[in-house]
Length: 303
Image (cartoon, rainbow, N blue to C red; front, side, top):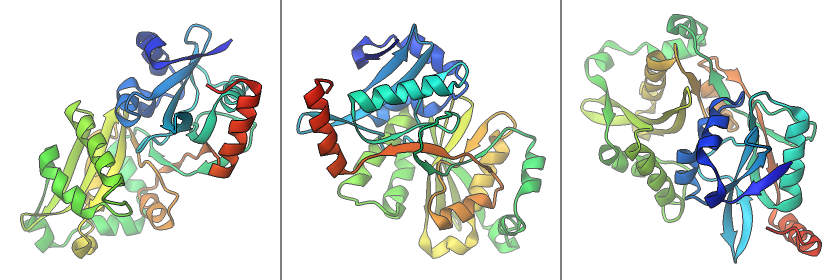
């Protein structure tokens, strides 16, 4: 009952309706987000008449299709009106039987018997802001109490993509500027142009010292990037910006921190007292991929 549909075969109206009504609803599975991040290199597994769907992004290496989640796409998996472990397992079995998988993440709602590595993510669910703030750690509350001098000489403003671009390129940590950075910037630009992405900056003495990028869709606001001038980290501008966005949206939207596996980042996020929502991910080494390729070719199942 599960079948594969290539991109051009997808009924995107039915696909979107399935996502909209899904218990696991995530912005990262939407057509717009995957079109941008996967560059339209994705297809779906579908159960019956779109009763459940599973988006499958891929890359091609030497003409071979390899399942790999795109940059900034944290969670995918199975989407259905009610999460069903048996159905999830059936999708997983189909995926592993018919595809070469380098990395594929499920979502934090999908229940699975199959054991896989869990990754951390943190969410704050909709509530009155005052109650959300009251749960912040004492340390986080102290960070948000700025000195009078900082208050007098600082402001928070939204930026256009062009205004944000230079600061991001100068302060994005952990990427190869020659290879990774252009890809991230292309995604940021496309998301901004479609009005999903917002850049919010903390200015101190008329200079940007912190910036965050937030993506809004499907009742969620996700933190897709935090960028800091290392010379002004002690001013806690990043904490102020995140709190500012939470205050704006938390009564009606889930705030998604989009991560938490790196210890110092996890500690930072936990200061806002979010809920830990782990999700499973399938991962294979290059060595295992070559072994699996041989098996798929032998069985005639390689897609």
